[in-house]
Image (tube, rainbow over the protein chains, first blue to last red):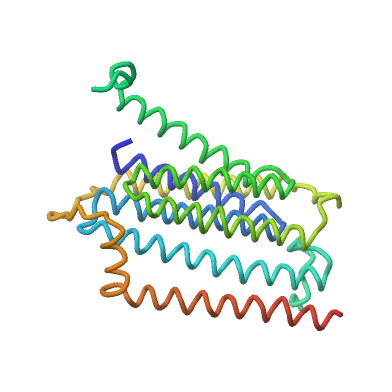
Length: 102
Length: 178
């Protein structure tokens, strides 16, 4: 509970669960959820380094806030794209979205 | 010492709570990835993010934990639920699972975990020689408006562009299809 490695392993496990979900799902919303897991693993790493290594504990918190802001922006854009895509092809399965395939 | 502290060792209590939080996080993460019903995935994501907020508490920042709850659980998960309701109805048939694809994804995940674990174990992590211990929210706010001003401004402009982009993308396609 009080060592850096514990937190790094937790973050790594969270990250690979996200990788697994991203590769295995075919629903766009499912892939978005997996990306959120990976972003959370990254913030967890930043906060762990912040707690155990950093000279100034503000830096990691600023970075984590930055990641959260980006995640919110990314989710808004992704969800609007998903909804636009659903209106077009009536599905959110990525294997149906092959209009640009040529 | 209060009577409660005599009864239960606080360190043991803290460790138990940490284990519970970690178990919640992983249970939530697996629920977010494995079931094929998309609504269960969102519920798992909420559980996982709440667990991550608990881990942030153990890492010393109550402010970031609250922000995690507010932004991720409060905003992102709710908007994902909205997107689910606006897109594929839940009663339609679920897509079938491809076993080779799942196996491939699992293989890649194990490889990535091996690489990450190797890096974590082999790197000699050195703490900074001089470490400040100022965790207060007031300092964080002061730094955000002075030294890390660029981060604050970049975050603001990205969020503004994202809002405009989201309105434009979903609104424009709505006009075209109607």
